[in-house]
Image (cartoon, rainbow, N blue to C red):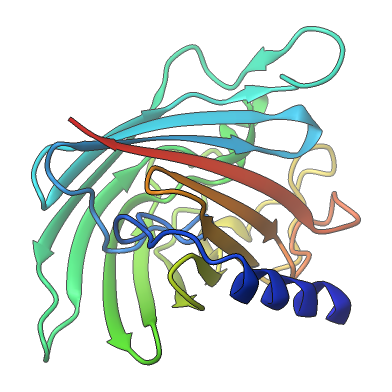
Length: 253
């Protein structure tokens, strides 16, 4: 692990490319108070475990209002037939209520119906629940590059087969290493996903989800991410952490 971290830092400072074109909309899984500039869009593709694929599209309606949708596919890579999570896309909405100032963080209200992993029809939920409705506060500091802190609350009212609809907490940070590379980390307490155990589908250890990743702004229009999910090993059905790759294309119109 130490050798991997050292290698990431070496690559970071040698291969500097282009500055990131807009504030991050998400860290790894959790949202930030970032929204897309008006008249811009992003197309993201998340490559997940077991050959899963999650494309998503977002557009900046105004500088404060971003909408998007996503559509997950399981076993897209590999042999056999792939499976849709649902027959319809999931939705993402973000509205920035307050801009960040010298004395106040930016505040965003949002809705995200896209969970993580596959959708399990029998228990009417994703392997990891969607955010649902949320509030997020973000504060950025200029300290040899941008350093952003993010903290939020969320409530999922539609994946409630287990009866666990508690208000949840999450927080994280992102740190620019140079113009091209950023490190990200987040922790989701998963308070709304710790009261239900099903030996076949969902077993939790009550540790929450600790995730980390690195983002590279390869060009003015392309960013790449490598993320490691569930470093706390909260999901008892998996023996190891979950690795993902995300490709983000950005454009204006």
